Image (cartoon, rainbow, N blue to C red; front, top):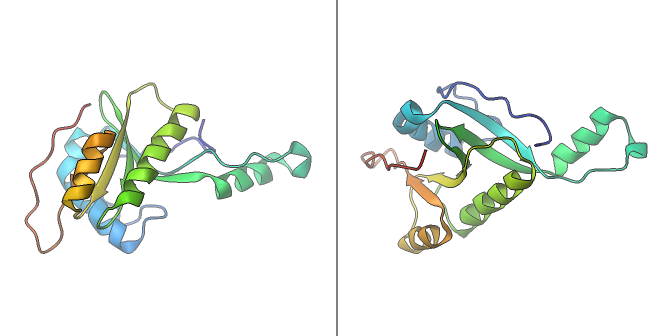
Length: 160
């Protein structure tokens, strides 16, 4: 189980998404504009893993706070009818975005919170052909939702 049970909310634009930087928020809201009809719910800032300290080192709340601080933080989890998208939001996504989302999926298999298949997804405004190739090879779904200067690309069909 994640450090704290994920709080699943409706997939609506609120302008506030925990721990997303301003550039991430713009990309995330473009994603919501395009994909909300497919989503049953989303959870933000899901903490997986982390260092579990000795019970003698503090009360339960203190130990959880330490674990949260040292955990991997998933930008968003999106639930569809049939799958769970584990999402990294990243402007101009590169190698580190692919690595992050693959690590999040690996940890989500340990800190189980859903029985739905886990789909690694990177949501970005743009990326290079090399990263697109690597994403395909690694089984990562790459969703480019465009920039303010670009027309929105077509919606890509995903599993689930």
